[in-house]
Image (cartoon, rainbow, N blue to C red; front, side):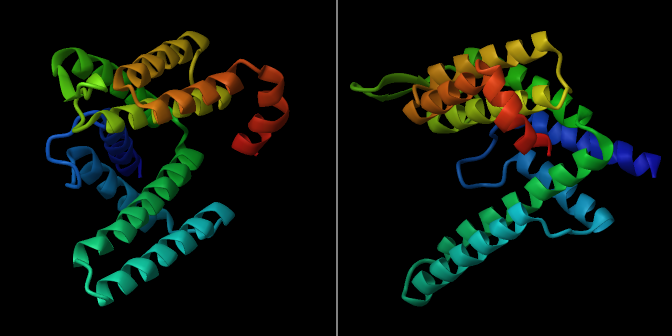
Length: 222
């Protein structure tokens, strides 16, 4: 059991650490996805799948997406469309596996991997250069991703998870602040308006401890 837990810890840590590194083109399975896929199915095979309100809602959404895409395919659309519900199914399995595993074994593997991911995200922005979009948008950072929007999305996820793990008591105050700064920098570097707005919303929650204590905290850990 100890070896299995150590192996799963390693998979979760490595999968999260490699989130900013895209080796193949968009739409393809990246190394981080393959590692997290093995992690997710290993956890589910070991602990089973317990229905919760949030994952049942996720299942309904996935099934609805499958019905819509199947209807389009039957009407002549390319079968590639069926990858969309498959992508949702992957995210359902991964979300549940991370939630289940961290509930049973703590957040350390996830938290450590997120710190490495933030460092790699910053390094790739500095090393891999920029992408010239057009004259109106100018130069937008891509980092180790394939496009700037992926970088912006990573920044939002980084900030949100840092906030969650701070609320759960996993991160120290200074580690959390460092991750906040990294997330804000990456969001701004991506020039993604959606990412910047989302980051500002989370920062608003962070700067209002009463709101966090009375409303957000019970929802996150209750």
